[in-house]
Amino acid sequence: NYSYTTLQNGQLVKVKATVPGVPGGMGYQWTEGDAAVGLSASLGYQNTQQTPYIPATGKQGGAIILLPQVQLKYQFTQQTDADFMANYAIGQSSYWSHLRLGYQPRWDWRLGPEFGLQAGQNYRIAKAGLFAATPVLGGAMLEFNTGLQANLNPPKEWYVGVALSRSL
Image (cartoon, rainbow, N blue to C red; front, side, top):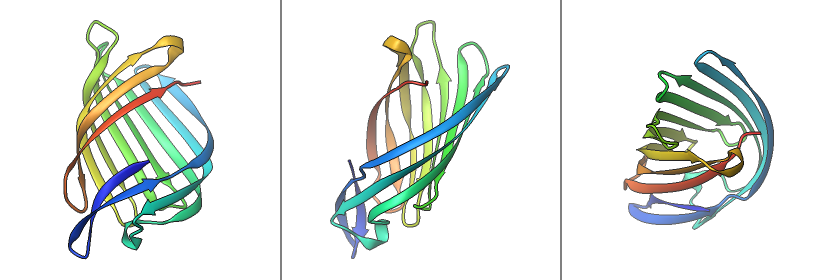
C-alpha cells in the first residue's frame, strides 16, 4: 500500500494505491576482490488499484511483470563502501534505481546517504535521504531510511522506510 499526491485539473489530489502481487525470481552474484556484481530476474503478476483512479498516473489492473535487475557493490576501505541497484519492469515500462554510500564505524551499524530515481510512463520520483542498517539474528539485515522525495508534480514529500531482508 502507498499513497501519493498529484495534480488533476489544477488541484492537488491524494491517491491511495494497493499493488498486491506474486513474484518469483533467481539471480547470481560474482565477487572479485573488493567488487561484487549481481544479476537477477523475476517474473510475477501484480494487480494495481488506485483510488481515485487518474488515467494519467499509470496503469490500473492486473499485469504480468518481467523484472531484470543489476546490483553492484564496491568496498573502498574496511569502513566505506558503495552499492547500486537498478531494475526495469517490462510490462509496466518503469524503472527503479538506488545508490547508497555506506560508512561502518567500529560497531555493526552501516550509515550513510542514499539516492534514488524511479520513473514510469506518467511519473518520475527523485529521492535523497539517510539510511541505517544492522545485521540481526539468522543473517538477516534490518534497515531504516528517511528522506525527501520530489515528484514530477508537486509537492515534495518525506519518506520513511523499514525493511527486513535476508540473502539465501
